[in-house]
Length: 347
Image 1 (cartoon, rainbow, N blue to C red):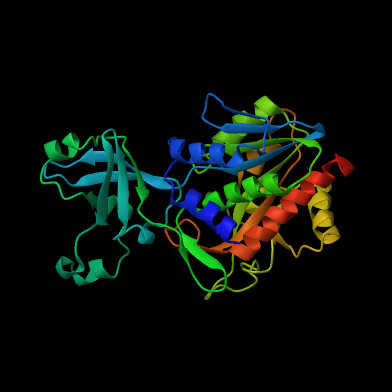
Image 2 (image 1 turned 60 degrees about the horizontal axis):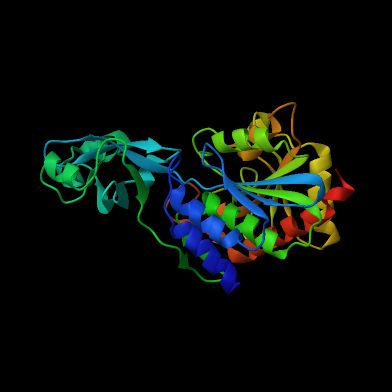
């Protein structure tokens, strides 16, 4: 479990919003070395690692990008206005420490807003929106900020590192989807699959499933699995709204986004569930009304590519304090490793 945690920590602590995944991509390439036959980076920035074998060809897709921010405008007095990249719940942004990735290196800042002491009573009752926030790097002028190598377009990430909780649970940023990346890497380390495997660390999932669409078009695999995280139930959420729980094993998606995303083809669903049952891996089925994954883009590529999703149950997603169980992540990697070995029985 320690090796798995160390892998996840290395990935989670790395920085890379959509379009700027370089740091994460380098780590993935290093971690896959020795477990694949060929690695390349395509024109959009996807890392495609190929493990040669026979039929069928299986594409694994895990997105490298995390939700973040981008510099929009620098005020005359040095405060920095930003725009959101990806789906943020604005409340989670206020008072966070961030890293601005300027052309001269990393610069630390904090997200601020008008202090409650100066707010009118009706203002204090309202949620502060991102548009009313700013970043303070300690500068006193626009020129000082620009001298740091910061300009409109500079990417920004949350300054947070993976930390251990009790019961083999961890918390950190970007577990969506660095947990999926860790699952993919660990599965390749464990499997004795004879099929051809394309392990793809995709880009720009959080802003439109872009990397999965282009890489799937190039590879045209027989079947694909997106490795992801799934919303897990927590205090204040009823089971009818979110039945997935921590420590209950991998989540296999039946459908998401109320069917507007993926409706997993029955052969893919049978492949994943029957493999889990054969190897006595506890699993959970998900039918959700929320977001979707790279699997949707892959499913709709070319004339259609059968695709499914295996996810790690995760709390507080799209926040700097996402929480998951390493036990679940371990079981997800095990299911994926075994599924690669049984793929030829289904496709």
